[in-house]
Image 1: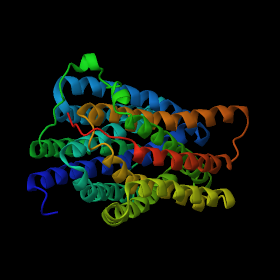
Image 2: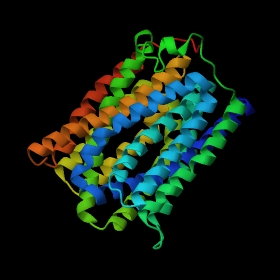
Image 3: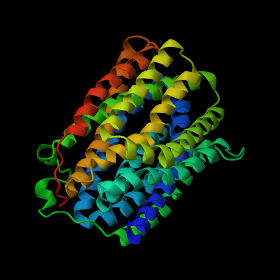
Image 4: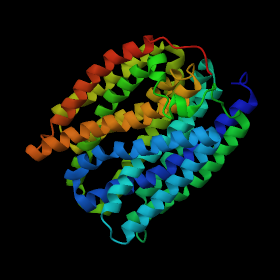
Length: 407
């Protein structure tokens, strides 16, 4: 990597550190919010809160679009870090004072803040590296970020006896301070990308017009929909099995923490080793198409042998690839696009559409659950159908024309 400028490498290292801090804190709030919500409302209500999550995410994304228009990308990431931390502290206060809806609010907030901040980090990366550099750097950047997630998952799994699950929320809020500081350092080293011109209020804070002028965005949005159908089905299947196996809230929290720690170790291997290697030796089309074949196979396993073990491995397989190879390969499609596509339309796709598709599947399962019990086999069946659609869409995404202008 010696042919990449030192300022660019330093900027990528700083933003990777910001991602590590962000994901470390997220491990605390992810395990805590999942466990607290199940304790407050029961596992059968998980599809309901998942269905509500896109509403919160849309609010996050729209407010971000306004902030980006007014203060620029560097200040926007700082303000969204601090705003997210303040929201978590408010939820923490409600939980410790026995206000049950605070656990639902925390779950919805965790779904929104993490995607908003992660995508801002990738918007910066996609603005400072070229496509050839991204093939080398994207995997290791994901890997450095995962070191924070691994540390967070390990700490949650070793939750001290004197610390309750609710106190993990305050730790997650505190982690956003170093996230903001490292992001500022990255922007100072790499420079702050500027919009190509025009009034954002006229273009729209969400840059929806870019979906017409840069059609690859539509294909990417559809790809996110089917991938999140798999994510949702595997998540609910795994959580349902875990709730039966671990009825005690703190035991369940520790199990979730251990699961996420193992997940992140595997992710780190794929990020540091597999993703850079595969992206160098394989065409991008092959990488994109191969990923859903893996999910098709794990869904068949869960369908044939339903258990906590098979459901957890299917969930881990999706998340490991999502955090590493799929993430690194997908971000390469954004690099040649315009500023508004990278900073605005990307948030619509990878934050709002990401959560909306997950919430849509959850809403459908919630409605089905009110009519009759949802058979466990429905979850791997959804994964099989979505994997099949993903294969078709992946072929189209890699073929889609991409403009060269980065204005």
